[in-house]
View 1 (cartoon, one colour):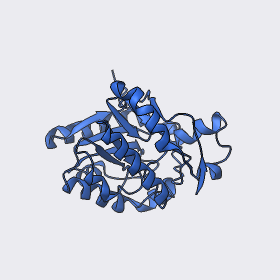
View 2 (cartoon, one colour; view 1 turned 180 degrees about the vertical axis):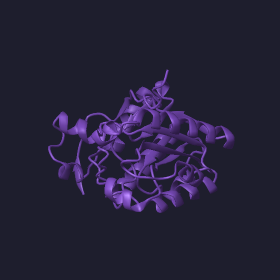
View 3 (cartoon, helix red, strand yellow; view 1 turned 90 degrees about the horizontal axis):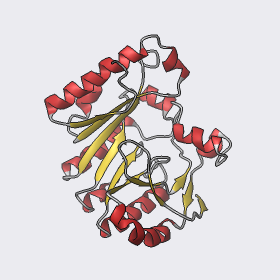
View 4 (cartoon, helix red, strand yellow; view 1 turned 60 degrees about the vertical axis):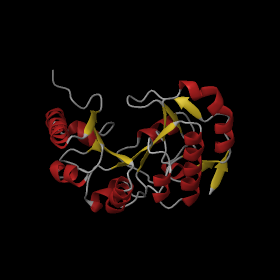
Length: 254
């Protein structure tokens, strides 16, 4: 595991459903090929130069020290902290990252700050011992392992992700699922209803389209497709009394 130090950690995010966030890892071994917006931005601004470098994560060694300095200054402004928006807090196969994420959540919770986590790795069962205000989520855009291996080659298998999420749900934790970036039929033919049924136990579902992908843009009916499937998500969530959020730009009809 490689390490770096940073000068700051907590910052206000511009993501539509976020508040504050922290990204205590540079890069992500999951190597998503949607493509990954975080990788595109890191490459654009010179933080990494190649896909291979992005897939070799670097942990911020002074994460906890930075939190000790920043929490007292920002505590009154923070409603919640999300781990993470440009990397993964529970990166598959990297226990050092998981340990740092757990320690960070403990520190934030001790200050009365709620945390939200999102991963394509495995949510550790230790999270069930932390604040019940926290929310734990997984990204799940398919149940087809062949598609996962093609598009998320380094991430955890779908079933393992679901099992870990279910374990936290059964322990009384708040859970959620991000179905984004959802693929169009020219990328994979699949049943959205089957996917929704698999996550029907969760408390919240976020649904969003695939962006920055030429194959999706070239799919002639992509606007109609996302309009239709967003409505299916809304209908499913309303029927099952699940909170939901449809990402901006997913529905384009007027």
